[in-house]
Amino acid sequence: MAEQLIISVSGMRGIIGENLTASIAVEYGFAFGTYLKNNRQRNTRDTAEDTMSVCIGMDSRPSGEMLKSAVTAGLCAVGIDVVDLGIVTTPCVGVMVRELGCAGGIVITASHNPIAYNGIKLLLGNGVAPPAPEAEKVKRCFLERNVSLADSVHCGRVTCSDRTDATHIAKVLAIVDKDAITAKKFKVVLDSVNGAGGRITKKLLAEFGCEVSAINDEPTGLFAHGPEPTAANLTGLCEAVSSGRADIGFAQDPDADRLAIVDENGTYIGEEYTIALAAKYIFSKRTGNAVTNLSTSRMIDDMAGKTGGKVIRTAVGEANVAAAMLENDCIIGGEGNGGVIDLRVGPVRDSLVGIALVMQLMVETEKTISQLAGEIGGYYMSKDKFPADQDQARQILESAKEVFTEAKLETTDGCRFDFDDGWLHLRASNTEPVMRIIVEAKDRPTAQKYIDQVTTIRTRVLAR
Ligand code: MG
Image (cartoon, rainbow, N blue to C red; front, side):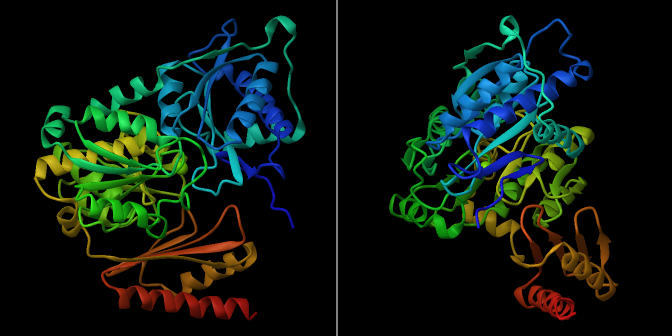
């Protein structure tokens, strides 16, 4: 059976040639443009007389041009001007939407999904994905085809901008001490999986005076390995770091919002460490609070706690984290999948921010990545999923609440149970009939104890 087209808070994602087609993309362009026009009175940057614009970028997938052209046509047809940014990263669009004063932004990307997929990710004028109620309005415009087409004179126009890389890099350089990093002449291996990250990241590393060995840096969209920056997909990077005696290896996903790190021994340290290391540097310099989701490692709490900072936990999803950061004016945020957010650059997970902050940490501490990871680690974490429909998921959560009565309970997004020696997060997926189980504890046997208790609950519920 063909998979369904997914329409969620972050936009639309599907399989090219099956459920995500040019005509669907045109209609999604109609819908997003109509939504923006309907909302213009709430957008202080626009008045009714002004034209509105949307900037659009894409990762390197071969289907990107087709989707970008189709969405652009849809936007122009409802009277929205479009600024074409070409092949750029997702955080680049987050930067440019604000830099250009656009009413919205669009990224043509399916992030870490395989090449068969592509997607249309939406950003509002503040650079953040629409909150759920606004995303619902866009979805309604799309499903009900409730759109208003412009006449011949008022169709939108298309322009291009080639300022993206320079604008974004300048913002990243401003949050670190470029000269101090440059003095270290770091030897770096970069794996951009032939996605959108290669070009701009090589420019940033050149600014930092690094000796760079780039692999999979051509933006062909033909991914050289599985596109998710996980250990199994990064054996080539690990090998290149160790054989090249590099100081560090960086891996990006195709739209370069996620960053994974390989230490100087060629060991993949795990995506959870990216946000923790970035937070370690930020909290060594600034006072304030952090935001992350309920499934992210406690390491960030340890970093914040050293200077009296707090960590606000949100439901899983970049938009939730970014919104909480803006609302609480937080100094660092992100998610445990390697996504780091610094609002001084933009409210979007950004691998370039992660790279800059981690290199600055190496400079300040004069320590290697393996030493730094060793200092902040020491937990055991397990992430898994199992089949459960909505009703089963609800019953499992109810049973878990009866079992884990001694834990501190948080129910913003499924159930998160905090124990003295670890935590457990159980949540139903928004996009597939599975439950995710994330456990972190002081050691493996403790984590296994909680996993086994959930298995018992599951078995009981599924036998009903
Ligand atoms: Mg991504």
